[in-house]
Amino acid sequence: MKKTTALLTVAALMSSAAVVNAETLRWARAGDALTLDPHSQNEGPSHTMRHQMYEPLIIRDTAGNFVPTLATDWAPSADNPNVWVFNLREGVKFHDGADFTAEDVVFSFERAKQPNSDMKELIGSITAVRAVSDYVVEIETDGPNPILPSNLTNLFMMDKDWTEANNTVNVQDFEGGEITFATTNVNGTGAYTLVSREPDVKTVMARNEAYWGRDEFPLEVSEIVYTPIQNAATRVAALLSGEIDFLQDMPVQDLARVGDADGLVVKQAPQNRVIFFGMNQGADDIEADDVDGANPLADVRVRKAMSMAINRDAIQQVVMRGQSEPAGMIAPPFVNGWTAEMDGESVTDVEGAKALMAEAGYEDGFSIRLDCPNDRYINDEAICQAAVGMLGQIGVTVNLDAIPKAQHFPKITDGATDFYMLGWGVPTYDSEYIFNFLVHGREDDIGTWNGTGYDNDELDETIKSLASNTDLDARNADIAGIWRVIQDEQLYIPIHHQVLNWGMAENVGIEVDPEDQPRVKYFTMQ
Image 1 (cartoon, rainbow, N blue to C red):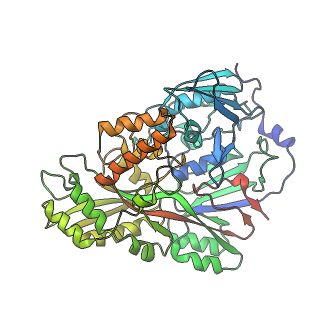
Image 2 (tube, helix red, strand yellow; image 1 turned 90 degrees about the horizontal axis):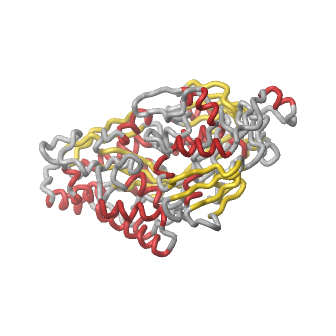
Image 3 (cartoon, rainbow, N blue to C red; image 1 turned 120 degrees about the horizontal axis):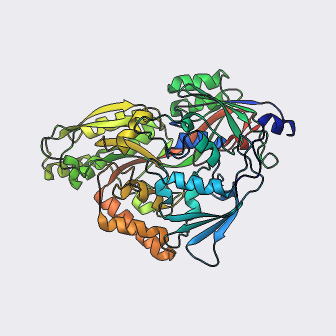
């Protein structure tokens, strides 16, 4: 059944809302959201911006527990183990006043499965989404999927009618540089509405006075002014001067200065994210090196030598000022499948690395370009600069090319880089998420962030079977086996687990989220 309530004006909704304080949160971090299209880019800061205005069926709290959002409860069907049943929250309105119903859920899932969607790996096992009634949805998968809800915490719901009316049914082709109505406009159900959007300059949001959760959340911020500030010193100066109230991407060299300043505090927590380097090992020859007719990265001895040349402890101490934890695998400790043993496997051994280079026939080394973002991860460019010197010790001459993430990420998804930095968070808290995006061979709906060219049919088959394996012991054994292959093949070079530091004015009340996803509806401003 179509929406039962036609367009209600925001003004009318505001007139019936309770009166609350007017508090502006001035918020900054290094980079901007790549796009506002809910299904275009699976990227942390982009999700952070959307979470203020759009909502998924479920979110997680800071402890990783599920929190009902647009769904009130969910469970496997008693009649069919391949089906999950979600009961939707009633009385929810989109920002334009239209009702949120099961029809919008069906539409949003179908949209998120489109080829241009960066969210399709998360829902690849779904074969059908059905509206049983206005407020009940069935999601069927191609076998029992015990962790399906874990894949839905960043899958945002759109208004079917609004999307169709504004000719934005198709997901934005981000890599192709497309701009659509949905990239700069929002009609979500979230706690904040979009007021203005100037990409890479400023985004302003206002409290949604008709929000369904007005009585459940503090909602003490009435206006959000979000400003990306790429320069680290300028970001800190803005916080110290009182120009902003809340800062993500705190420069580690300024933690003490901010923490000691009157009226400011720094809060810290381990992040669910690993920073690493990827290598194009699948090509016969690569463009970014000076070796003709061969690909040195295709030799596992070279990949292992490069990993052994990286001094993670030095990066932790000098570049990160202690604000990281050296990593030996590309899963953070939050994730099912992580083990301390594997995470301790990456050790520095320059002489051993030189011996491996010689065995591989590269005793004289080679040169290669390293592609690195300069506005995404904590000290990303500085980490790359440190790696340049470390790899030089074994004869690998690295030419660093550091650019903004908006240009860097398409290089990976388009297969236009041979050696690159990437960071990966795991919102599902399960290794399958890493395997689907970073390990499985690249196909239309899976492996889209696997820039390594690695393609192992047997491993791919095991990865796909994880989605429907309900024997958790057997599933975990498969996960451990996949990780063993990744480690032995040195598919990636892990660097470290990030530590989050949020700086803020004393009157801002919020705890650090391991996902680095501050949701302003939880903020207090006392």
